[in-house]
Image 1: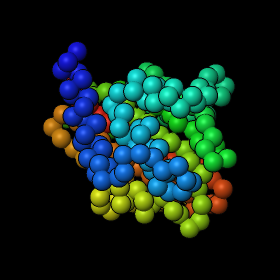
Image 2: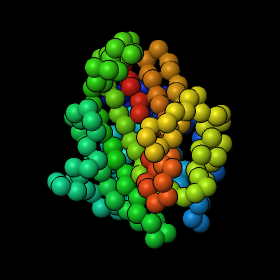
Image 3: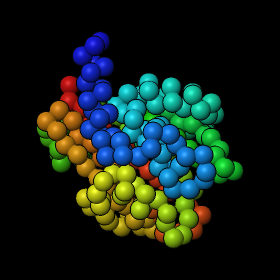
Length: 193
C-alpha cells in the first residue's frame, strides 16, 4: 500500500509540477485563474487517484450524475469506472468527469510501451467566452506553450505531454470556436503496471 501511495504521489508531481507556481488557494473571484485553479485542484492534483477525484467532488458537495444524466459523458472507449458531477460556480454550470480504463487499440498501436497501462482521466467542462481567456492562463500554469495544437471541427485542441519510463500524461484543452459552447480541460495519465 505504501508503494502505491508513493507512486501516486510521484505521478501527481509529474503532472502538477508546473502548477506549483500558482497560488496555493483558488481565487474567489470569477475568471480564468479560478477556472484553471479548480481544474488543478479537482483533476491535476488528484491524478492518477480516481478516489481522490471522488473525494474532491464530495468536498465540493457536487451533484453526482447517474443513469441518463451520466450517458452524455461516456467516453468513446469503454470505461471500467465512470463518474460525473454537476456544480455551479458564480452562476455558471460546470461538469466534472472521471474515468478509469484500459487503453484502446488505437493508443496501444501508437504507444506500445503503454499497452498494458491503466488510464485514469479527469475532465472539467467549463463555460467558454470569446476571446478565449483560458488558454493564456493554462499556458502560464503549464510553464510552456502547448506541445501541439490542431483543429477538430469547430474546436481548437491544445496539448501538453509528459513521459517517463513508467507513466505518460496528457493535458488537453478543447477550445470551442462557437460562442456558448462548452470548453473542456482534460488530463489523463497512463501508468504501467
